[in-house]
Length: 217
Image 1 (spheres, rainbow, N blue to C red):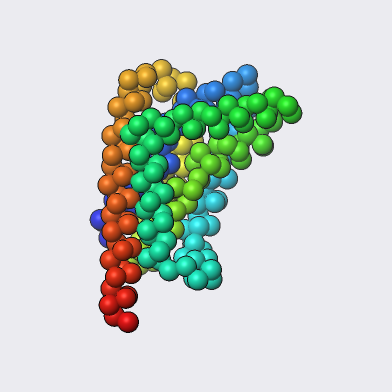
Image 2: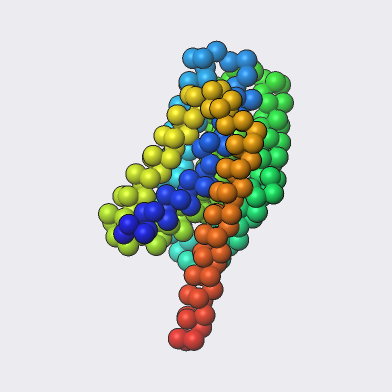
């Protein structure tokens, strides 16, 4: 149980990357008042936790309904997480996030620059917090929960990490200045290597499960 919860914590922390969201949040909410920033942060985190909770609770059932085996999803999800880790190591993920953020700012400028509702959902909640990587990881981890208690532990971990995102948003300015450019680069690359290793393990587990099923049949 402890190994399961630790694996869930590390995988989702690296995938969601709360600290890496700080500079993006600062850029997206530039021009807002402190009250509007708080409202945006709260709405974004509530939206993200609702999405991840939904996939944690019904994700495996959805796969069964679509006829997708858990082993196949492990391989696909592992490859997706590996790509995210690869981007983190070679600094491509930050570039993609900044491109998404820039595009969102341009879209906001065509409407109300302080439209809290729109900005909180896209791109903060989706895809920056509850993106494909986080959703895939959530489904994979929830499907391998050893018991109901393990699943409840996963929900608590999701709440904790999204709570970290909220805290980072509220402290985004000071946190970004404290880390500096060098600190962000070092942290991102270390987390990228760790996520890549976890992704390879997901793929290996999926391949092993398919091989055993083929031998058994």
